[in-house]
Image (cartoon, rainbow, N blue to C red; front, top):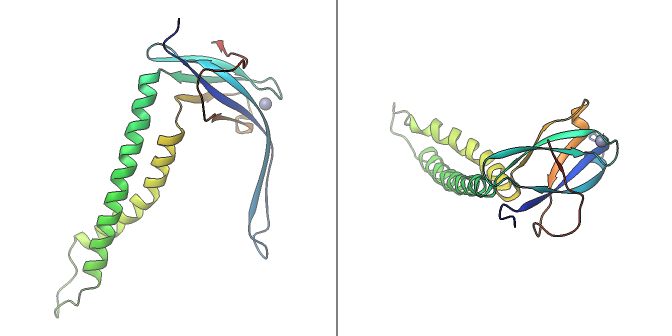
Length: 173
Ligand SMILES: [Zn+2]
């Protein structure tokens, strides 16, 4: 019996990545790929390296898989930070609008906190969705290394049920 569980990842081989338009028509990016889904065994504890073969060019990709509790932790922390960033964003925006909208007496300058709040609003605006996506998508599997050109390959989380199906299983590295 194995309580550590498994996780499914898609090994994606990028066939083409084209950007068209941009001047008259809106910019569109077209990426085509072929992928194969692998079932990866999670270690009981810590991390473990696995080798995944690209279904297209049979390149061997080295990936790292984390145990289930660590994966849950990263997910939880990312989501908590995303929520924190969202709160900070609203607070700094409200503060900046409040201070910026005030009529200042002659000779007085805006408080130091004003530019800080503008900066915080920008940073948290960018960070909140990034952290949220990471929290939602993180599955504990990261691509460590692939033969050149590395850019042709990606690992994608596969949503849905874990540990079912009859997919090819990754070899232990
Ligand atoms: Zn490939």
